[in-house]
Image (cartoon, rainbow over all chains, first blue to last red; front, side):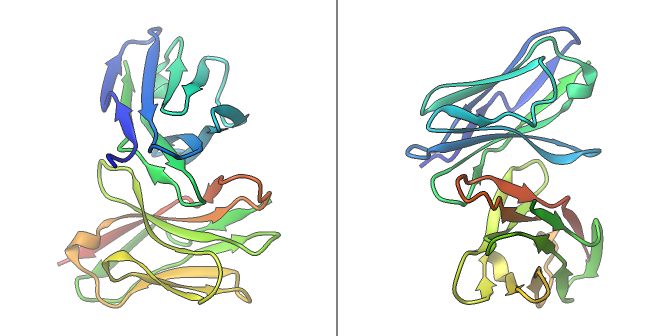
Length: 111
Length: 115
């Protein structure tokens, strides 16, 4: 298996623009997690899905952030409008059992 | 609620020296415990995990950890550090609601290995 796939790997955008991050989980996994990592705040869980259904989005910073999982093989995290404080590395992870498998991350820079 | 405390955000050892990274947890149910490693510009990858059974768990790259219930600890050790061990290490505990695969992560320990 190719593992968790994230795209793009790097994104540079200007404040106010819409940003969409994409994730393809490992085939057969039924949980998908979105995390954000910054130097200041460490690793934060934003939202997670079970069988494509959002279970807990309490970590989503504000209404500018939204996530969807239209099917078992694809999820998106959208930021609209983006702000400089959204600059971070965003990770997607998937699991079947309790072990989570992480993607390589998307490094987002908002100017 | 569960929590994970990693003592020491930065640890520096000499090549060949013992590595000891500390992790304490709180959980209202028997814990599932994990150590993940993150190399620069990469995602997290699993080093080892404890679910049930033997309390001394061996992982990849010569690392091991011991679950000590009485001390609520799950410290990570390696007898002899290698330059390639330089990375950030995260301890995690499974959320005790038992109904999900959510993990609670510690704040991480950055390990530096000096030549």
